[in-house]
Length: 350
Image (cartoon, rainbow, N blue to C red; front, side, top):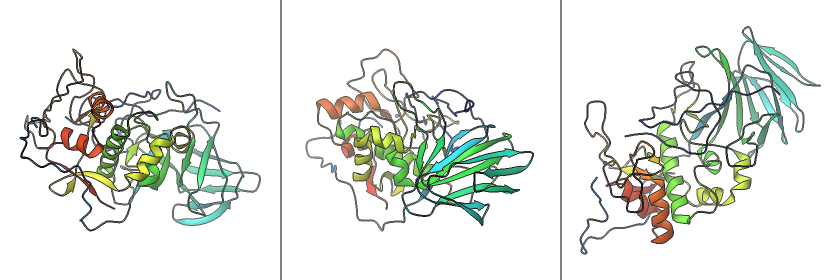
């Protein structure tokens, strides 16, 4: 199969919501991720002995319904091959036009304003995009022949849960391969840590990643200008799908154990940037006018960061310092999150 175009951008500044078709970069995916925003004097280390700090998840709010998220997996002008172990209903836009049987491989392409979907038993042409939905819950599909790899991980990541959408981008002039799935299924495939780190650290990263993803969900029907919510690369956060669940089962386990939990400030879910390491302390977030309009993002000390230079945008959670605090000092994940995101709570949202 011809080479795929995979979206990547490692941001050292504020990452805006992923408006499809705008400002994307084509490259090989790397494992280092910096989710971006751009300091609170230490809110935990500066407390007196009389201060009481709770490291429990708050569960007293009215719970919402779980949301779905739309992820741009990749884009390519080449024909692709789709296959699943379960039946998938074929939609042309919102109209049901057929069924892909379990195990049946079909070819999907776009040319001169027409969408094509063919197999031994199917021959369809449409003016509208293809949307393939699993007949049963938990459906997993494969982009056959895809070569999506990540440096340092010996696997190919081309298998995903949920709905598949094949949709041409008018501005980019290239078809997007979009995966729509429940937010918790997305979280199982997040690959921002390895599989063997301290539990507190891994859970802290997952809750931060869930908060970031939730803040980027549109909650409105897709438009030609916004086809999806996030990229599957480190332009947002690294999502590798079903195969990642298999090779990193502790990530999937801890995602399930923290399901629905997010970081909040004054009761609202907030964006929670993280990055590799500092030169001793994180930075305070400053907007384009030089003001801090995100009071949970202020400077805190990173005692385990013994580096001369900052690696990443420097705002929010230093993942190296967090890893060391969880490993050496037994900090739990709520403790970590409340330290790096000042004045926040960790709450069960759904």
